[in-house]
Length: 332
View (tube, helix red, strand yellow):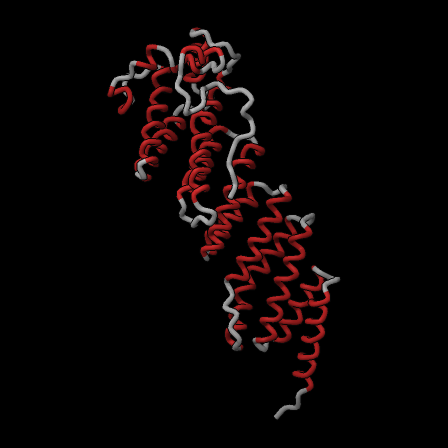
Protein backbone atom coordinates (compact mmCIF):
# COMPACT_ATOMS: atom_id res chain seq x y z
CA UNK A 1 0.00 0.00 0.00
CA UNK A 2 1.10 3.55 -0.69
CA UNK A 3 2.53 5.93 1.89
CA UNK A 4 1.13 9.44 1.54
CA UNK A 5 3.57 12.20 2.38
CA UNK A 6 4.19 15.70 1.14
CA UNK A 7 7.68 16.11 -0.30
CA UNK A 8 7.94 19.80 0.58
CA UNK A 9 8.91 19.81 4.25
CA UNK A 10 11.85 22.12 3.79
CA UNK A 11 10.41 25.00 5.78
CA UNK A 12 7.51 24.70 8.20
CA UNK A 13 5.65 27.62 9.71
CA UNK A 14 3.93 25.53 12.38
CA UNK A 15 5.51 22.97 14.73
CA UNK A 16 4.78 19.32 13.91
CA UNK A 17 1.37 18.19 15.23
CA UNK A 18 2.79 15.90 17.93
CA UNK A 19 5.22 18.48 19.28
CA UNK A 20 4.49 20.49 22.43
CA UNK A 21 4.72 24.17 21.62
CA UNK A 22 7.26 26.18 23.61
CA UNK A 23 8.18 29.81 23.31
CA UNK A 24 11.60 28.84 21.95
CA UNK A 25 9.89 27.26 18.93
CA UNK A 26 9.17 30.74 17.58
CA UNK A 27 12.80 30.87 16.42
CA UNK A 28 12.24 27.86 14.15
CA UNK A 29 8.52 28.07 13.38
CA UNK A 30 7.22 31.56 12.72
CA UNK A 31 3.57 30.67 13.24
CA UNK A 32 4.37 29.23 16.68
CA UNK A 33 4.11 32.87 17.81
CA UNK A 34 0.36 32.61 17.31
CA UNK A 35 0.18 29.49 19.47
CA UNK A 36 2.04 30.90 22.47
CA UNK A 37 0.28 34.24 22.95
CA UNK A 38 -2.12 34.97 25.76
CA UNK A 39 -5.00 35.06 23.29
CA UNK A 40 -4.15 31.54 22.18
CA UNK A 41 -3.85 30.19 25.72
CA UNK A 42 -7.03 31.76 27.12
CA UNK A 43 -9.82 30.36 24.99
CA UNK A 44 -13.11 30.19 26.87
CA UNK A 45 -15.69 27.45 26.46
CA UNK A 46 -17.69 29.64 24.10
CA UNK A 47 -14.52 30.46 22.17
CA UNK A 48 -13.62 26.77 21.72
CA UNK A 49 -17.05 25.28 21.06
CA UNK A 50 -19.28 27.99 19.64
CA UNK A 51 -16.59 30.17 18.09
CA UNK A 52 -18.08 33.32 19.59
CA UNK A 53 -16.18 36.58 20.03
CA UNK A 54 -12.94 35.33 18.51
CA UNK A 55 -10.10 37.53 17.40
CA UNK A 56 -7.89 36.41 14.51
CA UNK A 57 -5.47 34.37 16.59
CA UNK A 58 -8.25 32.74 18.57
CA UNK A 59 -9.99 31.78 15.32
CA UNK A 60 -6.89 29.84 14.32
CA UNK A 61 -6.63 28.29 17.78
CA UNK A 62 -10.23 27.14 17.53
CA UNK A 63 -9.28 25.20 14.39
CA UNK A 64 -6.57 23.47 16.39
CA UNK A 65 -9.06 22.72 19.15
CA UNK A 66 -11.40 21.13 16.61
CA UNK A 67 -8.47 19.12 15.28
CA UNK A 68 -7.71 17.82 18.78
CA UNK A 69 -11.35 16.83 19.20
CA UNK A 70 -11.32 15.04 15.86
CA UNK A 71 -8.10 13.19 16.68
CA UNK A 72 -9.42 12.11 20.07
CA UNK A 73 -12.60 10.78 18.50
CA UNK A 74 -10.58 8.99 15.80
CA UNK A 75 -8.39 7.33 18.42
CA UNK A 76 -11.48 6.11 20.29
CA UNK A 77 -13.04 4.66 17.14
CA UNK A 78 -15.80 7.28 17.01
CA UNK A 79 -15.39 7.88 13.31
CA UNK A 80 -18.66 9.73 12.69
CA UNK A 81 -17.76 12.17 15.46
CA UNK A 82 -14.28 12.62 14.04
CA UNK A 83 -15.74 13.36 10.62
CA UNK A 84 -18.08 15.90 12.18
CA UNK A 85 -15.12 17.85 13.57
CA UNK A 86 -13.14 17.50 10.34
CA UNK A 87 -16.12 18.88 8.40
CA UNK A 88 -16.39 21.79 10.83
CA UNK A 89 -12.76 22.61 10.10
CA UNK A 90 -13.45 22.54 6.37
CA UNK A 91 -16.44 24.86 6.74
CA UNK A 92 -14.40 27.40 8.69
CA UNK A 93 -11.55 27.28 6.18
CA UNK A 94 -14.00 27.77 3.31
CA UNK A 95 -15.30 30.92 5.00
CA UNK A 96 -11.77 32.32 5.09
CA UNK A 97 -10.30 31.84 1.57
CA UNK A 98 -6.84 33.04 0.67
CA UNK A 99 -7.86 36.66 -0.17
CA UNK A 100 -9.62 37.05 3.22
CA UNK A 101 -8.22 39.77 5.49
CA UNK A 102 -7.84 37.06 8.15
CA UNK A 103 -4.51 35.92 6.74
CA UNK A 104 -2.86 39.32 6.34
CA UNK A 105 -3.94 40.18 9.89
CA UNK A 106 -2.39 36.96 11.18
CA UNK A 107 0.83 37.74 9.31
CA UNK A 108 0.94 41.09 11.12
CA UNK A 109 0.41 39.27 14.42
CA UNK A 110 3.34 36.98 13.63
CA UNK A 111 5.60 39.94 12.88
CA UNK A 112 4.45 41.75 16.02
CA UNK A 113 5.10 38.64 18.08
CA UNK A 114 8.68 38.32 16.89
CA UNK A 115 8.38 35.62 14.25
CA UNK A 116 11.76 35.10 12.58
CA UNK A 117 10.71 33.78 9.16
CA UNK A 118 9.47 35.81 6.23
CA UNK A 119 5.76 35.07 5.96
CA UNK A 120 3.15 36.21 3.44
CA UNK A 121 -0.60 35.84 3.71
CA UNK A 122 -0.59 33.32 0.86
CA UNK A 123 2.18 31.28 2.46
CA UNK A 124 0.42 31.25 5.83
CA UNK A 125 -2.88 30.21 4.24
CA UNK A 126 -1.30 27.21 2.51
CA UNK A 127 0.78 26.27 5.53
CA UNK A 128 -2.34 26.25 7.69
CA UNK A 129 -4.06 23.82 5.34
CA UNK A 130 -1.05 21.64 4.57
CA UNK A 131 0.80 21.52 7.87
CA UNK A 132 -2.11 21.54 10.29
CA UNK A 133 -4.60 19.38 8.43
CA UNK A 134 -3.35 17.67 5.25
CA UNK A 135 -0.40 16.18 7.12
CA UNK A 136 -2.72 14.85 9.82
CA UNK A 137 -4.96 13.11 7.30
CA UNK A 138 -1.89 11.66 5.57
CA UNK A 139 -0.67 10.27 8.90
CA UNK A 140 -4.07 8.72 9.59
CA UNK A 141 -4.26 7.28 6.06
CA UNK A 142 -0.84 5.70 6.53
CA UNK A 143 -1.75 4.33 9.97
CA UNK A 144 -4.88 2.62 8.68
CA UNK A 145 -3.05 1.42 5.59
CA UNK A 146 -0.39 -0.24 7.75
CA UNK A 147 -3.05 -2.27 9.55
CA UNK A 148 -4.06 -4.26 6.48
CA UNK A 149 -2.22 -5.22 3.31
CA UNK A 150 -5.58 -5.78 1.62
CA UNK A 151 -8.03 -3.11 2.77
CA UNK A 152 -11.68 -3.13 1.74
CA UNK A 153 -13.15 -0.38 -0.42
CA UNK A 154 -14.86 1.10 2.66
CA UNK A 155 -11.68 1.11 4.76
CA UNK A 156 -11.31 4.17 6.98
CA UNK A 157 -8.15 5.23 5.18
CA UNK A 158 -10.17 6.19 2.11
CA UNK A 159 -12.32 8.56 4.18
CA UNK A 160 -9.11 10.41 4.99
CA UNK A 161 -8.20 10.39 1.30
CA UNK A 162 -11.49 12.22 0.67
CA UNK A 163 -10.58 14.81 3.31
CA UNK A 164 -7.18 15.29 1.67
CA UNK A 165 -8.78 15.87 -1.72
CA UNK A 166 -11.12 18.51 -0.30
CA UNK A 167 -8.29 20.31 1.47
CA UNK A 168 -6.10 20.37 -1.64
CA UNK A 169 -8.96 21.94 -3.57
CA UNK A 170 -9.03 24.74 -0.99
CA UNK A 171 -5.29 25.31 -1.18
CA UNK A 172 -5.17 25.15 -5.01
CA UNK A 173 -2.36 22.65 -4.64
CA UNK A 174 -0.04 22.23 -7.64
CA UNK A 175 -0.34 19.07 -9.71
CA UNK A 176 2.84 17.57 -8.26
CA UNK A 177 1.44 17.80 -4.73
CA UNK A 178 -1.83 16.26 -5.88
CA UNK A 179 0.07 13.53 -7.67
CA UNK A 180 2.04 12.49 -4.59
CA UNK A 181 -0.94 12.62 -2.20
CA UNK A 182 -4.06 11.80 -4.24
CA UNK A 183 -2.66 9.57 -6.99
CA UNK A 184 -1.39 6.71 -4.79
CA UNK A 185 -4.56 6.80 -2.72
CA UNK A 186 -6.82 6.54 -5.76
CA UNK A 187 -4.71 3.67 -7.07
CA UNK A 188 -5.03 1.84 -3.72
CA UNK A 189 -8.76 2.53 -3.69
CA UNK A 190 -9.23 1.12 -7.20
CA UNK A 191 -7.24 -2.02 -6.36
CA UNK A 192 -9.21 -2.53 -3.14
CA UNK A 193 -12.50 -2.22 -5.03
CA UNK A 194 -11.32 -4.63 -7.74
CA UNK A 195 -10.24 -7.18 -5.14
CA UNK A 196 -13.60 -6.88 -3.42
CA UNK A 197 -15.54 -7.16 -6.68
CA UNK A 198 -16.97 -3.64 -6.42
CA UNK A 199 -16.50 -2.99 -10.10
CA UNK A 200 -18.40 0.31 -10.23
CA UNK A 201 -16.33 1.75 -7.39
CA UNK A 202 -13.18 0.43 -9.07
CA UNK A 203 -14.07 2.07 -12.37
CA UNK A 204 -14.91 5.36 -10.65
CA UNK A 205 -11.53 5.48 -8.89
CA UNK A 206 -9.64 4.68 -12.09
CA UNK A 207 -11.55 7.29 -14.07
CA UNK A 208 -10.79 9.93 -11.45
CA UNK A 209 -7.11 8.94 -11.46
CA UNK A 210 -6.93 9.26 -15.24
CA UNK A 211 -8.86 12.53 -15.29
CA UNK A 212 -6.65 14.13 -12.65
CA UNK A 213 -3.34 13.04 -14.18
CA UNK A 214 -3.86 12.63 -17.95
CA UNK A 215 -0.18 13.10 -18.81
CA UNK A 216 1.21 10.73 -16.17
CA UNK A 217 2.59 7.61 -17.86
CA UNK A 218 2.70 5.50 -14.70
CA UNK A 219 -0.92 6.19 -13.84
CA UNK A 220 -1.96 5.66 -17.47
CA UNK A 221 -0.46 2.19 -17.44
CA UNK A 222 -1.91 1.45 -14.01
CA UNK A 223 -5.34 2.66 -15.10
CA UNK A 224 -5.28 0.57 -18.27
CA UNK A 225 -4.30 -2.55 -16.31
CA UNK A 226 -7.07 -2.09 -13.75
CA UNK A 227 -9.71 -1.39 -16.40
CA UNK A 228 -8.60 -4.56 -18.22
CA UNK A 229 -8.79 -6.68 -15.05
CA UNK A 230 -12.11 -5.11 -14.15
CA UNK A 231 -13.53 -6.11 -17.54
CA UNK A 232 -12.37 -9.71 -17.15
CA UNK A 233 -13.71 -9.97 -13.62
CA UNK A 234 -17.21 -9.12 -14.85
CA UNK A 235 -17.35 -12.25 -17.04
CA UNK A 236 -19.16 -15.43 -16.11
CA UNK A 237 -16.91 -17.62 -18.32
CA UNK A 238 -19.64 -20.26 -18.54
CA UNK A 239 -19.41 -22.61 -21.54
CA UNK A 240 -22.91 -22.48 -23.05
CA UNK A 241 -23.79 -20.31 -26.07
CA UNK A 242 -26.07 -17.96 -24.14
CA UNK A 243 -23.43 -17.24 -21.51
CA UNK A 244 -20.82 -16.59 -24.19
CA UNK A 245 -23.11 -14.05 -25.85
CA UNK A 246 -23.85 -12.43 -22.48
CA UNK A 247 -20.12 -12.14 -21.76
CA UNK A 248 -19.56 -10.61 -25.20
CA UNK A 249 -22.24 -8.03 -24.42
CA UNK A 250 -20.56 -7.23 -21.10
CA UNK A 251 -17.27 -6.72 -22.90
CA UNK A 252 -18.74 -4.34 -25.46
CA UNK A 253 -18.57 -1.31 -23.17
CA UNK A 254 -15.14 -2.32 -21.88
CA UNK A 255 -13.61 -2.60 -25.35
CA UNK A 256 -15.12 0.76 -26.32
CA UNK A 257 -13.63 2.33 -23.19
CA UNK A 258 -10.22 0.84 -23.97
CA UNK A 259 -10.45 2.08 -27.56
CA UNK A 260 -11.12 5.59 -26.25
CA UNK A 261 -8.26 5.19 -23.78
CA UNK A 262 -5.86 4.49 -26.66
CA UNK A 263 -7.15 7.49 -28.60
CA UNK A 264 -6.65 9.75 -25.58
CA UNK A 265 -3.18 8.35 -24.79
CA UNK A 266 -1.58 7.27 -28.07
CA UNK A 267 1.84 7.09 -26.38
CA UNK A 268 0.74 4.39 -23.92
CA UNK A 269 1.84 1.18 -25.63
CA UNK A 270 0.69 -0.89 -22.66
CA UNK A 271 -2.90 0.25 -23.25
CA UNK A 272 -2.70 -0.79 -26.92
CA UNK A 273 -1.56 -4.28 -25.92
CA UNK A 274 -4.38 -4.63 -23.40
CA UNK A 275 -6.92 -3.29 -25.90
CA UNK A 276 -5.84 -5.99 -28.35
CA UNK A 277 -6.22 -8.69 -25.69
CA UNK A 278 -9.64 -7.43 -24.71
CA UNK A 279 -10.86 -7.46 -28.31
CA UNK A 280 -9.42 -10.97 -28.64
CA UNK A 281 -11.38 -12.18 -25.61
CA UNK A 282 -14.58 -10.66 -26.98
CA UNK A 283 -13.99 -12.21 -30.39
CA UNK A 284 -13.70 -15.66 -28.81
CA UNK A 285 -16.88 -15.06 -26.79
CA UNK A 286 -18.75 -14.00 -29.93
CA UNK A 287 -17.53 -17.03 -31.86
CA UNK A 288 -18.52 -19.36 -29.02
CA UNK A 289 -21.93 -17.69 -29.02
CA UNK A 290 -22.40 -18.44 -32.75
CA UNK A 291 -22.02 -14.76 -33.69
CA UNK A 292 -19.20 -15.53 -36.09
CA UNK A 293 -19.44 -12.52 -38.40
CA UNK A 294 -19.23 -10.17 -35.43
CA UNK A 295 -16.37 -12.24 -34.05
CA UNK A 296 -14.41 -11.69 -37.28
CA UNK A 297 -14.81 -7.91 -36.99
CA UNK A 298 -13.68 -8.08 -33.37
CA UNK A 299 -10.60 -10.20 -34.02
CA UNK A 300 -9.54 -7.83 -36.80
CA UNK A 301 -9.46 -5.07 -34.19
CA UNK A 302 -7.34 -7.24 -31.93
CA UNK A 303 -4.84 -7.84 -34.76
CA UNK A 304 -4.83 -4.12 -35.59
CA UNK A 305 -3.74 -3.35 -32.02
CA UNK A 306 -1.25 -6.24 -31.85
CA UNK A 307 -0.14 -7.05 -35.41
CA UNK A 308 2.68 -9.33 -34.25
CA UNK A 309 0.58 -11.34 -31.79
CA UNK A 310 0.47 -14.90 -33.12
CA UNK A 311 -2.40 -16.01 -30.91
CA UNK A 312 -4.65 -13.32 -32.38
CA UNK A 313 -3.63 -14.30 -35.91
CA UNK A 314 -4.43 -17.95 -35.17
CA UNK A 315 -7.81 -16.97 -33.72
CA UNK A 316 -8.54 -14.95 -36.86
CA UNK A 317 -7.75 -17.94 -39.06
CA UNK A 318 -10.00 -20.19 -36.97
CA UNK A 319 -12.86 -17.71 -37.08
CA UNK A 320 -12.47 -17.33 -40.84
CA UNK A 321 -12.65 -21.11 -41.21
CA UNK A 322 -15.71 -21.23 -39.00
CA UNK A 323 -17.41 -18.50 -41.04
CA UNK A 324 -16.51 -20.28 -44.26
CA UNK A 325 -17.98 -23.51 -42.95
CA UNK A 326 -21.21 -21.75 -42.02
CA UNK A 327 -21.58 -20.00 -45.38
CA UNK A 328 -20.91 -23.17 -47.38
CA UNK A 329 -23.12 -25.38 -45.24
CA UNK A 330 -25.94 -26.81 -47.43
CA UNK A 331 -29.39 -25.63 -46.55
CA UNK A 332 -31.74 -28.31 -45.23
